[in-house]
Length: 70
Image (cartoon, rainbow, N blue to C red; front, side, top):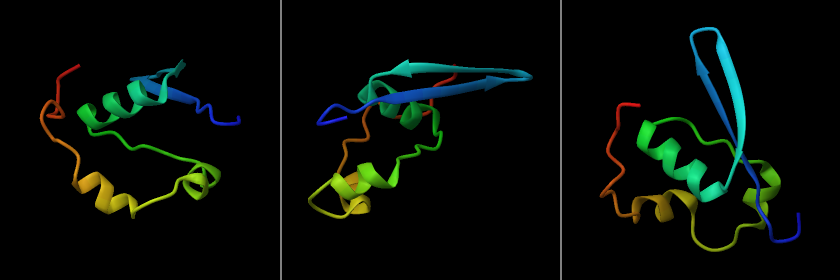
């Protein structure tokens, strides 16, 4: 919506499933730490400008992104 982005965390354990609204930055950080997939709508990817996503991701500082037991 305009320049505001939204995200939802989808959590599951055993037979329990829950969805939680979150800030995109928090959702991405949690997904990276837990090595979970990140899904993005095509519209968001089209609006994003700049370098290739794989190139951008390869430049991220990996410190603090280690897998964490939750």
